[in-house]
Length: 161
Image (cartoon, rainbow, N blue to C red; front, side, top):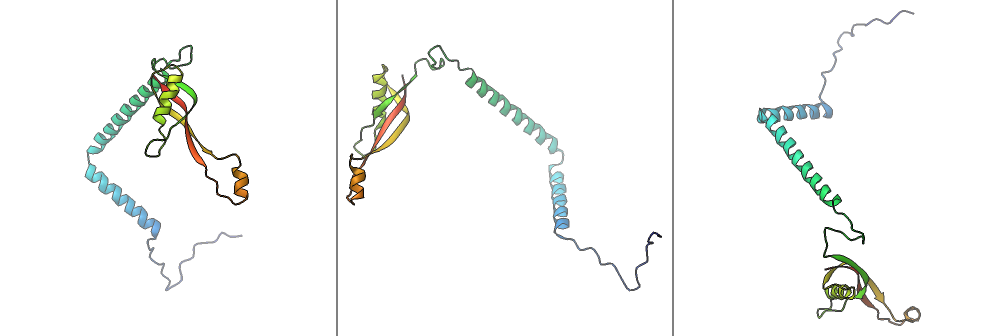
């Protein structure tokens, strides 16, 4: 079988001029934008690259220093952090009293928890909230009676000094 040969276009047939589509227009716009940016930056491109490298190096050094500080905290035989020699975590469950404004006063509860563990003062680092209802609340609700429950807050861990 013979290979097809290129046939000349029939008379009167003209190939249409290529019209730019979205991709062509977008590509041209990107190239023009890049060329315009490079022309405005000129020789400063090298300076900008050096500044970016310097910033990256200083950020890496700061991150390395922070990681060293965190990993450098050694634990003593009791398991407490040796970099915080006067601070310890006390665990327990101390109820937060209600302040005059109606909010729980967990500062007092944290201090009480710390004093109970032999420390002078402290601040709460963990707490829990519980809804306290009468013993027959479920049965009363089933009968359609209104049940009044209270919310209580407890400090469960405190950082003591």
